[in-house]
Image (tube, rainbow, N blue to C red):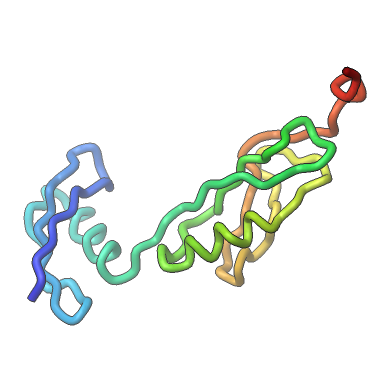
Amino acid sequence: MINKQFTCIECPRGCVLNVEIESCRVVKVSGNKCSKGEFYAQSEVENPLRILTSTVLTKGLSLKMLPVRTDRPIPKSRVAEAAVKIKELRIDKPARAGDVIAENFLGLGVDLVATRDALKESPMNNEA
């Protein structure tokens, strides 16, 4: 049996969770002051998920790098792979915050969305 401690981030209390783990499964959670703590501990041990935020290179737009994020959490085990794929992307069409940049990203059923507007670069910006 393995014992781990987590600080729960599901509510403002920040409970320190003591988690007993056996065969990669949560056996017991203590220290939580609400039901969210137990769910959080189980998720962190058995299937940790993360929202991925990054930037995508642009060409001819008002931003050189467009901030993006996944619209839902993805498995933590796939974050590095996702980061590599994002690095390969290039955007040359205007995008507004919320626009889908990559649909069904990595086949995970999540979309990669813009978090800021990137419009066509003004001709005035090209004069030097």
